[in-house]
Image (cartoon, rainbow, N blue to C red):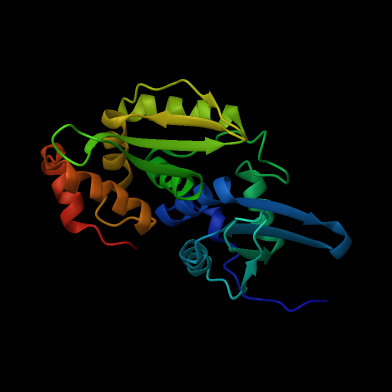
Length: 241
């Protein structure tokens, strides 16, 4: 029998901002492993950014080790893996809609409205991106064309339901899912991306990946006319939890 590491086995039994964020991140970059031959059931969470896994490990009160993963391609980045063996965590995540080999068929879970922003932000930090699109201008080095938020998933069904949730609760317009090279994409242009920014970071204290928040912040520094009182309050008061 292997070593037993401490973990909060009750973490996913009750909704909270932290639980919703971690669940969203696991929906993006996590998986369940049923290792029957070892009588083990595991939660696996991976990332190329160590910061993500250290934060999740902290919230789960886990003593499990984060290990390095070799790149899967010649030009790939070094990755990291947090693997937690615990039957209670595994079973609770199954009740919340996760299952082994989920990537192509996963559905959107039943998330209470008050925790939707936390779940969606967790998913975004795992499998989303934000980009500033630029182009050369006639009288200056470049002009800012637009802000672009993209969610990706192997499951079209998941993104369709995410789009409907965002459309219903914050008035986003995009409902079309694009077929990418290895996954499906849900992409939003500037106006909707700004609404997503407010939805994600509007609470005084919230969990987020600082690198992605800083891309939004950089956009507003470049396009200061887009800063309204709500955005200013977020930019002035935001510190990563």
